[in-house]
Amino acid sequence: MAELDPIVFVVDDDAAVRRSMERLLRLAGLMVQTFESARDFLKCERPEGPACLVLDVRLPGLSGLDLQQELSQSGKDIPIIFLTGHGNIPMSVRAIKAGAVEFLTKPVKQRTLLEAIQAAVERDRAARQSRAATEDLRARYEGLTPREREVMTLVIAGRLNKQIAIELDAAERTIKFHRAHIMQKMNVESVADLVRVAEKLGVSPRTD
Image (cartoon, rainbow, N blue to C red; front, side, top):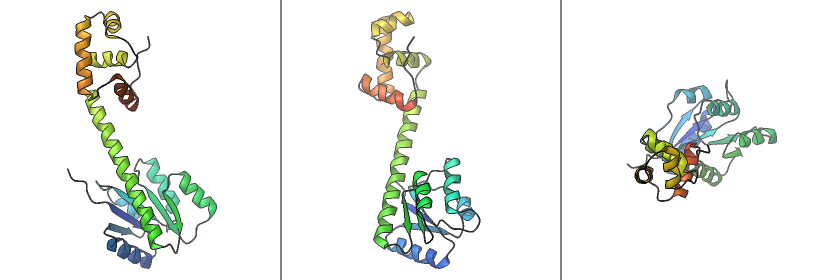
């Protein structure tokens, strides 16, 4: 399935800034949606494709930094570029520590802003791909039978087929059968790959 075009959200209470930003971004071939306040932005639905947020710090009601915190706490991760005419070092430090891509001051060079937006969109695209890959792994793991999951915890602990067979009171050929199915279902070719997958999923090796 083709990836959706990225969209840039702009939140700024200055109508002139919103208009100029929209014009610049559209000329750069980007989809853009503008908002006057943080509350207005919160009412819109998160897009299916990659996105980023260009955000003013000083806004009526909920500030830009408060919006960043609210988005983080609600799990609505979106890369943020702060753009403000009233920035200071403590503000920028707080924003960057909380995960902002950039903290830029007005007036900003168009190239600087567009480069920051490109970096933010790429960050969101990579995060989405990572989440999708993890969801695929989770679905594969859920497709294992209870017995296969049990065998998997012993395989990633480094046990040999013979040792697993003794521990589970099963025939060694049965363990080989389960092991082959696990590798196939999890789409891995080696125990090392299976260990890495288990770590991503939070599946611990059996140690008893």
